[in-house]
Image 1: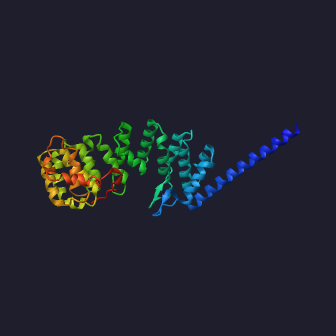
Image 2 (image 1 turned 30 degrees about the vertical axis):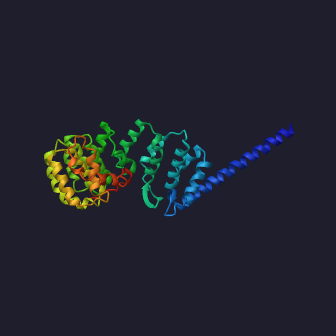
Image 3 (image 1 turned 90 degrees about the horizontal axis):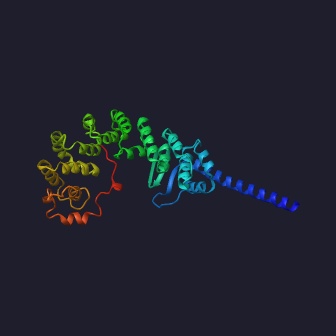
Amino acid sequence: MKKVYFIFILSCAAFSFSCNAKNKELEEAVDLIRKNNCYSGMYVGEAGITPDEYIAFTKMCEKATDKELLELLKDENGVVRAYAADALAYKKAPVDYFSIALDAVDDIETVETFEYCFLNFSQCGDCILESIFPYLSGTDQQKIYRLLLERRRNFSVTCRFLETDLHSDELYDAARKWAEEVNKEDYASLKAVGYISTYKKEQDWNLVLSIQNLDKSIFYKSCLNYIPSHNKELEKIFEEALSEVEQMKEFSLSLENFYECLAVMHNDFSKRMLHIAEDKTGEDNNSKYGKPLMLKVLKNHNSDGFYNDFFEGNEDILTESSSYLLNPDELILDLSL
């Protein structure tokens, strides 16, 4: 009996030592994250090295329990909170992600971020939502979207939502209130105008017009939702815009959306404008900003052969340039012209 008791004592001591060692490793990892104070990805810099703080994050995933990670979400350091959310998501921990998301909406501490060669600044709540959003139900996601709109959170999660066609009365109302305060310095407010345009409500047309000189890309994309109802007004706008085609080559998404508007009009006016734009871009056949971009857009609107004359003699351009035509992941953040 004494032998059994002695073995039990040794086992408890060994278990306690193991827990203490584990906790010490977790504490060291968290301390390093606090010290470096940068929310980094797996590979950073031109050499693609794995930074110390990311290695510490992997230790956090390995050593921390779900309960400990939930406690770390309350840490005073924003980078620690962001990595704790990452760890919970990585482990697919069975926790209340909606509660975490609710807290993240109001977590506006600025944190330094480093991904590949891009050193930037984000709000901590945005980083947290990026990690856990896939674990929210569709209903809970909509609730978070509404809160982000109501509280004017200029998060990347907010901006991505504003590019979707997810509609509801509550989301429209929240987005419209933000759109009514649109200004060039608030990118999400510009995106809010684009979003409400997808509801195609006449009452929003003047808001769309108000961003014409603030963000050409969002403006032209929004105009697509008012073709053909406002064609006469748009024809005048597009004709004046031809003088900016050379400038728009510097902002590829603006040019693509401009071409898209003309292509969707699908009438003699649009064909005439496209030919003028083609002449203005010259024989720029060897870049994604010239003729290949126009042909890429027209190809999606030529099922009836209406735009065949643009393709005559240019078949090789479209084929040869397909490897460098714009992809959504390559699009440059557009600025006002």
